[in-house]
Length: 381
Image 1: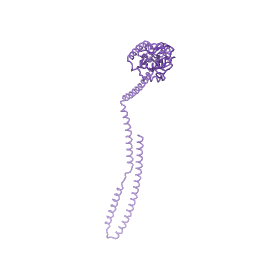
Image 2: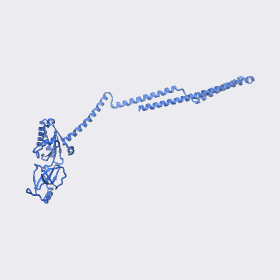
Image 3: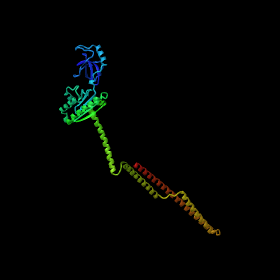
C-alpha cells in the first residue's frame, strides 16, 4: 500500500503522485475523491511508473507540502498519456459473463466479471493487462472451454459499446478483430452473436447487475415475444375472416344479417299485436251514437201522430157516441203509447247500460293490449 496525492479521476482509475515523485494509477473504488487529496492506495501491478518532471527524489524522502502544491498546479497543465483511457467496451457471455475495457491501441486495460463463473475464469487469466484484445478474448474462450461451460452452452454473445466522441479508427479496428474472433469461434463449432449497444444501455445493464450482452439479449427476446403475440393475433383474425368468406359472408355481412333477423322478429310481433286488436274490435258490438237514438224516437212519434189524425178523420163529428168511443179509444191509445214510450225508455236505458259495459270492456282490452305491447318492447330491447 502506498500514499499519494490525487492528480486525476476518471471512471475506472485514479492517477496519484507519490512522495517519491512517481505517477501511479489505482482503481477507482467509487468513492468521493477530491483533486489534491492524499489517500492510501494499492497501485496497479503492471502500471508504468512515470517520473516527475520537477523532482527526482530519493526513496525515503518526503515531498514537501509546498512542492506538492506546485506539482499539482503544474500537473493540471500537463497532458497525461491517454493509453489508459477507455475507447470501447466489449463483453463476452456464455455462462460466464465478462467485460473488457479497451484503449485507443486496442489493448485491454481492465477486466470485470458479472457473475461467479466469470470471476472463476478471470482468476485463471494471467498477464492480460495491455495485451491485444484478440489475444485476451481467445484466452478467455479457451479457459471457458477448459472449465466445461461449452458442454451445456454452445452460444457466444459479444457486445460492443463505443465512445462516439473518440477516434473512429478504434471502432473499425475492433470490428476487424471481432471478425477474426468470429472465424476462430466458428472453427470450434460455436455460435457467435455480435450485438451493438449504447452507453445508456450499458448503464441500464449495470443497474441490473448484468453485462451489456445479457441485457440486450433479454430485451430482444421480450420484443420478439411481443411481435409473435401481435402476429398470432393478426393470423387468428385473418383465419376468422377466411372462414366467414368460405361461408359466403364477410364479417360486416354477418353483423348485418344478425340485425335484419332482429328487425324481422320485432316486425312479426308488431303484426301479431295489430291482428289481435282487430279481432277484439270485431268481437265488440257496434256502437250507436246518441244522435242516432234521438232520430229513431222522433220518427216513432211522427208515425203515432199521423195515425191518430187519420183515425179522427174517419170517425167524424156527427155522432156523439162515436165521439165518446173515439175519446175512449184515444185514451187507450195514449196509455198504450205511454206504455210503449216507457218500454222504449227502459230499452234505451238498457242499451245505455250495455254501451257503458262495452266501453268498460273496450277500455280494459285496450289497457291489456297496451301492457302487452309495452312488455314485448321491453323484452325486445
